[in-house]
Amino acid sequence: MVTIRKSTEDLRHFILSHVQDHPNDLVNFAAEHFGMSRQSVNKHVRALVEQADIIAEGKTSARIYKLGEGRMANIVFDITPEIEEHVVWSQRIRPLLKNFPDNILELWAYSFQEILNNAIEHSEGTKIEIEVLQKDGLTEIIIADDGVGIFRKLRDEYQLDDEKHAALELSKGKLTTEPRNHTGQGIFFSSRMVDSFIIQSGNASLFHLPNHVFDFVFERGKVEEQGTIIMMKIENNTSRTVNKVFDMFELPDDEDHGFVKTLIPVKLAQFDKEMMISRSQARRVMARVTRFKHVGLDFQGVDKIGQPFADEIFRVFMSEHPEITVYSINETDQIKSAIKKAKADAVDMER
Image (cartoon, rainbow, N blue to C red; front, side, top):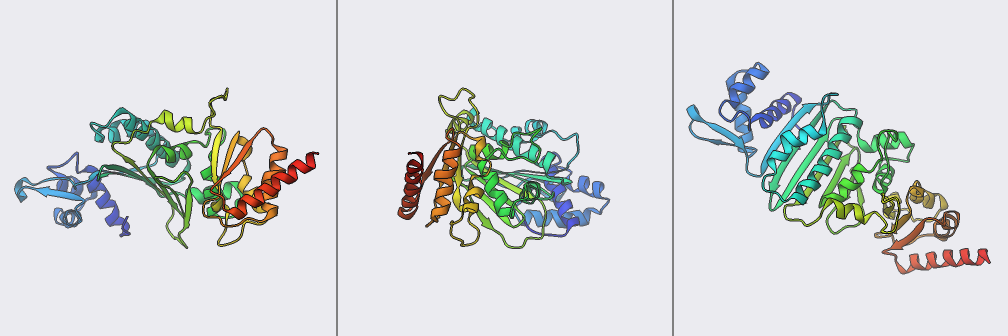
């Protein structure tokens, strides 16, 4: 999203939001709304045409405007108590996704409504912008708000080390700032429903991308703007279903049939280039995992761990919580050796 002056941004967002409803009188409609001259509005319309955001067809006297190729919608609205995510979905987004298979519509219905609800109820912002785009067999939906920022809010609520630490906790699932009203599952499952899921907020970006079971984070440096941007993409011919995604995080013989499995990307707990050595680092990785029954630790991108780190998880934690299954994947030989020793020590201490 290009940074431009607020007045220009508001006008261009308005034009993009109403071009579908006012293809014949777009310039007059915008000029009347903002109390501007037609000439002033035309300047911005021409800029949007040059950017291919909208297309102009016909001569001046009978010109018709429509959204540019690939762009299906650009919607901006104020956050108010009256805004309901299912209404926005059914009235503004669902009609755009014509001729889509039922499984894809269900994936989008779940993901879109969960993320929009999160922005409405938790962002503490004043505006939300939604973009819907199609290109190369993919549909992308972007939801942005101007609130406090999701990682910053979680960092402050849970007194975490920084925004990267907040991203780690979010990637585990079952994290919410309002536990009385929300389970904390919405963002986690939405990221698994889609083919590509990116959160940009503050100085961190959390990615869940195709062919990656785990999440990873990029630090963005010092960022001035507030708010959260969430970008989601789904292939238009995917065979994934909502039920298949839920099944991935349930245990077949679990009586509760709930969200009982999680996979933790250990690298998210690694600050800068520090080695994963200490017990406190291990406790950071294992924070809140007692909410699950099956916990996987993904060591992708981690070369070495210290013996105290391994001991804290694979002897101390597992001894204290025998009801929780803990396993590891993508370990280096050194990590496998450290884990093996910690488990052997646990056996020796039981004798």
